[in-house]
Length: 318
Image (cartoon, rainbow, N blue to C red):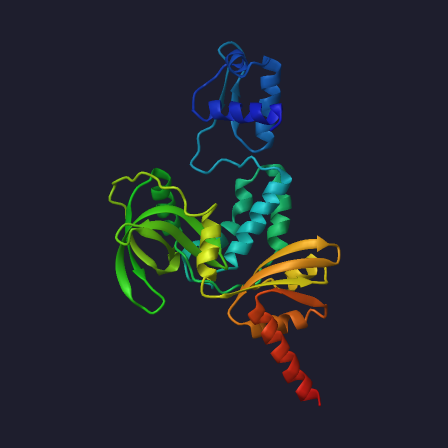
């Protein structure tokens, strides 16, 4: 962070207390000169912050009071990323279903009014010309996300109702740790107090969250990250395969973008994939469509399936 940015944030922090500050007082607090303070105040005004000034003896600086969220201190790239991020999230929820996707859609339509004046036109242009293709995903309540996040941050127990894939319902008591977004689904990683083990819960299947106010001592996570643990759990019932492909990594990643797949570049025209699939037949067909040579590193079962499919296709051509 540059010295100017750090100084502006510190100046804004002082002004947001609502107090009146004289120029010399702010200069002393910021360890700079009154002239620099005047320049920094003008910068804040350019960002859209309503800093009022009373000149002369007894003069002061003060941030005008208001009910609206003050303009956000974004640079150009951050403003564009925020607009695009909201648009993508909005596209993950069907219309009029509520939840975090609908909230993002509402924010997407009004974000420019919270940006500094100099960025509003740019962000508005991105918002007006950007569309995210709809992706079907279960709606997740924004309040549920916020409640679980607060409980996890404060190390507080939670209770909630949970519905499994087969429709079975139960009441759970848990220690919440992380919320993970993976494959268009939101998950909670928590320690299940009744089962004395780590569990992952789909947030769209959670209901009736309550925070009784009791606290817990945090445990070490069961993996390097919650996302890594979740990916491992979701992959347990699947088949793992490692394949070397004679094609550029970006091309392979694009072809397999909807699969659970890690792509490792081995050079400009070669890469290795590690993937987890429901069936080897599905994988071999998708690899065949790449129109590139590939070699199965593991497992042997996948090699056998490839040979069997090759024989079958050969007979079909006879």
